[in-house]
Each structure stands twice: as structure tokens, then as C-alpha cells.
Amino acid sequence: MHLLHPEARPVTAATAARGPYLAVCAAAAAALTVLVAVDWAPLVSFDRAVAGALHRSAVAEPGFTRLNRVLSDWVWDPWTMRALTLAAAVWLWARRERLLAGWFAATSALGTAVQQSLKSAVGRERPRWADPVDSAEYAAFPSGHAMSAAVACGLLVWLLRREGVRGRPWVWCAAAAAVSVAGVGFTRLYLGVHWPSDVVAGWLLGALLAGLAAVSYAWAGRALTRLRRAGPTGEDPGP
Image (cartoon, rainbow, N blue to C red; front, side):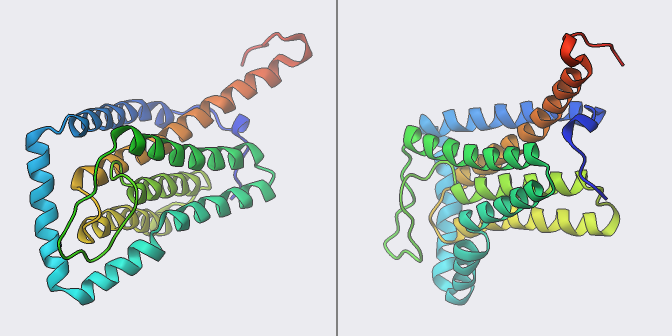
């Protein structure tokens, strides 16, 4: 199996089919951001009810709470996710897949910039408890843990698919990615440092960025193919 250069990978029907998926993610993330920004009462009530129930459980189950802290602070920490993405970028660079390596690094950096910008713009406070089981700094919306995991796992799953991974190995890898994305969201809720809508927004934005990376890379490959076909004359001889 070999990861081909983008110009050797045409824009497929699967790539084109990501359009509706990206539109749904973008619309849902935008709508949720607006609802959070205006403190929509039904959403606020739902967030408080879920957060309160999970916090009571966390206080009552210290052993399970410690496990969630380990998973949140080490296994699924944003820096762990960024390190995985960087490792993939380094591996791609070593294989001379330098455009794709740069795409990975740029997408990861963009994800960090987007989440920090939204945190600053929305300025949502984190849950406050009389008996906290964990703490976190800066604004709550969106969840950086959830978004970082969605970006990293989305990119890695896309890379494995491009590498030709299929069958049982593909199922196990996809399952591990899904568990990681869902799991880190749960840990942030269980530890009482995020509202449910923070986590959902992180998932949506992360999925959107990973999908945009895949689609834009495919289109970049097609553009490079046209440029190479055109040659020094600037004329495309066609397929």
C-alpha cells in the first residue's frame, strides 16, 4: 500500500458526497453557537440538568472520577491529539508526501485557532460547583478536548482510508476513533468542566474541519493535475 500524491488521486464521488455532510455540520455548529451566545432558555435548562446529574455521580463515585481524569488529562488530552497528528505529518513528510503533511499540520493549527477564537468571542463561563472534582481554565465554548479529538481522529481515519486499510483493521481503527471522540466528550461532562452544548459544538466543528481538509486536499490535487498537464504552454490538453 502506498499513499499516492494528490495529483494521482482524482476527485471521486465519495469526495463530492462530503458536501451535504459538511453543510449539515456547518449549519448545526452555527446554530448552536448562536443559541449559546443568546442564552436560549431551553438549551440552558438542558445543559444544567445534564451537568448537574453527572456532577452528582462524579462526587459519589471517586474511583470512576479518577479514571475519567486520567483519560481526559493524558489519554485524550488535546496535546496528545496534536502529537498524533504531528506524528502522522512527520511520517508523511518522510515519505515525501509533503503537501499532505502540510495539510495535516495546517488543519491541526487551524483547529486550535478556531476553538480559541470562539472561546474568546462567546466568553461562556464553565459550570461552577460547591464541591468540584476537577478544574479548567478559560472559556467553556466550544470544548477544546472534544474538538481536538474530532479533528485528529477524523484526519487519521481519512489517512488510513487513503492508505487502503479495509476489512477488520479498518473497523477496529474506526471504532477506536469513535470511542476516543465520544469518550473525551463524556469525560469533560463527567468532570463538570463543560456543558453538553460545549462538547457537541466541539464535535461538530472538529468534524467540519476534518471534512474540509479532505475535500480541499482532493481539489488541490485536481488543480495540480491540471497545472502539470498544461505544461509550460499553459494550455490543458484535456483528459
